[in-house]
Image (cartoon, rainbow, N blue to C red; front, side, top):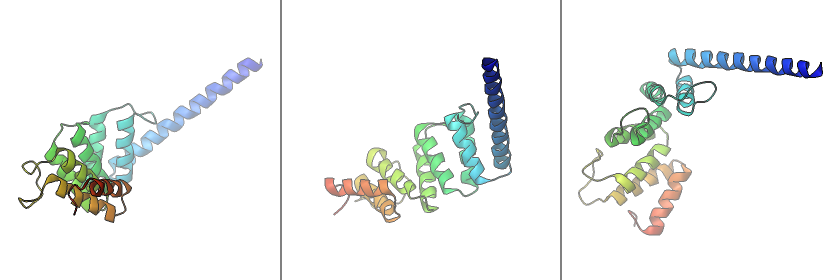
Length: 173
């Protein structure tokens, strides 16, 4: 019957989809294990969001972000920073957040400068960050400097935040 045929077609499609998903999981996992940074980041994101057949596992996500960072990935550094900022798969740790965000920024991920700007503007105190500062500088001064670096690098959010700093007269002249 037509109904049985339609059911059979749907089952075959479902089987093909599952096979494709398993092949993708295997390919990404294998490439990540071999040290491919893009695969490590892709695998971390799949664990973080529970996509493409991967169950949410924030500890695995953190571990793969960290492996990518260790291989020199600026994006991996920024992702590890976010994990430490919010306690995703690891403990919250402002100092480690700061260090990884700075590493990511220095590797060319301008969003890292914006993340640091937000950190200093909202949470940072002179006693809690590791970057050398002069005693006369305020958190707003440091935040504006970070936003300027991000803006100069083309980061749209950094440009916006620098504009807000100018609008509010915070950390800028």
